[in-house]
Length: 256
Length: 238
Image (cartoon, rainbow over all chains, first blue to last red):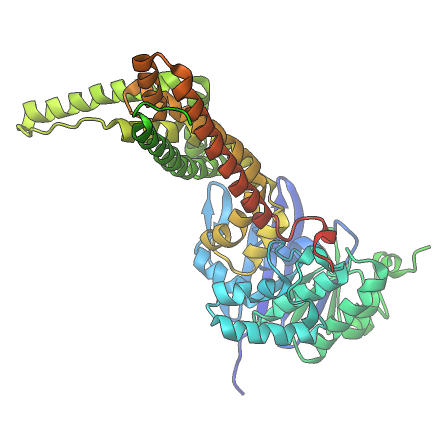
């Protein structure tokens, strides 16, 4: 058997904001096709953990290994920083992120958003990128919106467009940062459906979410974070079906 | 028709000088403005201080004083250097500050400071999520500047930019003081010679007004262009 490197591995990651340690040594291994959901109350550090994975936040300690390549860091007077920004840029191109607030580029049409990074970062021929982009928009049900600007679309459409933008990178891993939290309830379903399809086709995904049904049905692993530490982790049937800690039981209990 | 008493062609030449001077100064000012804005937003303490010093000095000293200082002071400075080169190495060069170049540099320097403030505010007004998306998709800082920061900053900068340009245009009238023959100087000379100031100053005022009107039209077009994607959603929903 050929030993293929893991798409993403995080070892003992720590993050401090000032003197406040928000991540206290978190590790994670994503195998090809894994869907790992991170759950926890707000302030548990789950979004910060996700944002450390593509270095939108700089971790103070810990290792980050993307497809077998360890990201190198150096100490500067501003703190710990990546030693080689080109390496970071290459790494980010392999991990594409879907944001809570979509963050589609407002001055570009939907199709322009989707082809932007493939053309300018991956240096893909424009024609090819457009073809691929249109196919992806078709897939998320937005082909007829290709020439619309983000502001002309509903939140759900923007988020599906943002997923198409992420897919256009042919990423190793997709990072989702509370992708449905900013949506009106009736728009959540369409976005979750697209994500379920992605999971089914074997995409490697790391998802920060409050959607417990999604976590239960789709994920291969659930991590419950509390105050920057993993309180429970494992297959969803175990963690969500049979929680051990009192805190997780409380967290999962139906809210009144 | 007004009888320009043969001064017509010279007045037009002067108008051309005014336009060239204003446009070139604008280019210098925009370039310096972008540099200053970057310096003031940078993490480097030194760059930040340099940027602040520049804008403070320029904004605190009258334009006319700066222009005289740069033109005469600059010439004296250059003479000192060339004299020293001659004494020391026997290199004999003579550099005469050209009025036009001096004008462009001075006006560019003055308005670079104002542009710097305009650009800084505009850059800070860009939604941080837009930048973060660029980062997350592997864009380098340079690419992000070209594709996201700059186009999104422009809609915030254009009102200030347009304002600065109008003031810059009128500031070019000061260069007649250092001996550059722009249209104000031509008009002043002609008025003196003919004792008919209105005959020459009214056309000059009209030309300024004309340039200003064309500029307003261009800025309105630019504003529209950079607002695409940001206006009221109703504007394009069909």
